[in-house]
Image (cartoon, rainbow, N blue to C red; front, top):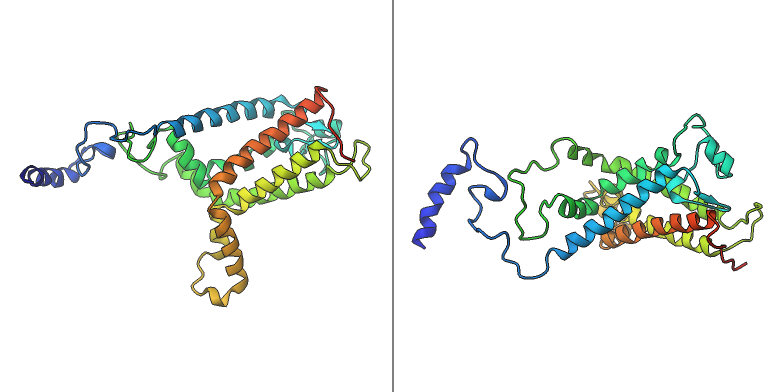
Length: 282
């Protein structure tokens, strides 16, 4: 007890001293030499997150710059939707015209910035990649290697504050992907009444994307934020309640939709490269 009391004056004197260390080495933190006292495999989750995220980043980057094999009638890859350049028209995938016909690079580069910005600024994904890539911190009760902490007050992390605006863009993208599912009920000649395995995969993907988008923390705030009396706003209260229930599984939807969007793109790529034919149900 005496040793603990003796340490308190020194800690309080150093707290405001110029040049005092911050982060885990701050003067008000406990002096524990070990990085962590945890005995479980705390490193497994951030390691798995790192591997999966890195694999998705590599795959998505290659596919985004490929500018080929993104359309297998009537299926359009979600990485390229909406497709708005001349290369889209040549492939037969320009359902919304070609307002960026002059664009010579991959049409995916015009679109992916919006779902990518939404996911990068997502509260769940921030936690995931802060831990997995920046080790800030790698897990609960595990010291991070950084000596200082600035939060999201400096560039580039200050851009995380644009998350709500990216949510609005993500809703528009989800609407377009929903329309793509409707079009996936056509055959390669444009006649309605077709349903193949690709149709079901695209349908499952858009459902997961909507669950992820609507379970977003920003959506929860938009539907019910700043309301002092829910009784005076029964419609918004019901919307807020619905979104709140989805929000409990936001992290799960984030993972599922990440896998589904990559799976659908891979499936369409395999169809476009004639690896196999799309199984059709009618």
